[in-house]
Image (cartoon, rainbow, N blue to C red; front, top):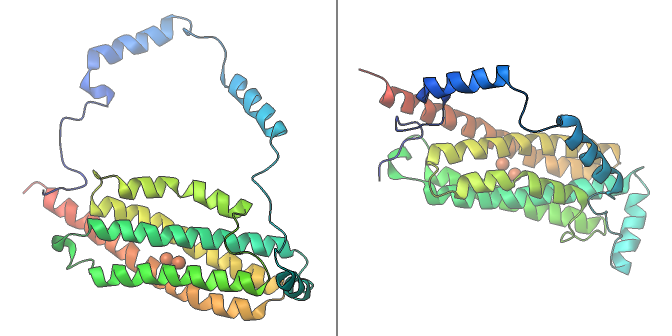
Length: 245
Ligand SMILES: [Fe+2]
Ligand SMILES: [Fe+2]
């Protein structure tokens, strides 16, 4: 079925659809008292009470194996905050794993009519890059004696953050172009994530890791450049198709 991201239709969500009702609604807000009491301070106080009771999103686990502990003991002595590095490595791993799944879902939506602008081979290559990034991070965590399968606070956080991206791409109603926009959000975060991880690895005295991660950052730059261009080309293309002649 032919589908574009921004076709004209029977959208009734805006107030312009009903000028009379809009007028009546505005008049009501000016003349009457609100129908419910209180303001946003109530929800802020409730949230504050939960914040005070909350004890954070999990913790960074201790290395699980004796071998791992020995290794991390030797390696971790070099940095001042080894747990921060383990948390950020696990965070990046979780996001790269999601990135792999996002590309897999996007590839399902690829259609022959966009092949000229977005070659499917390139999407498959990017998906494979993301999977390799997962492997690279798992190896780095193992080298530090940490468990790459552990869900650290950072890993948990990015899992929740990326839920919206996954929902947007796997929604059967969203177009390829709309799904690609969600990938752009992921790639922007990917790029920033590697940048910060490299800085942290360096400051913790792990120059070898930082060097390996620099190659991943280069790949992310390529992903970002391409996805940006594709989103722009598809958006402009749809604008041209939809433009009045
Ligand atoms: Fe990646
Ligand atoms: Fe990427």
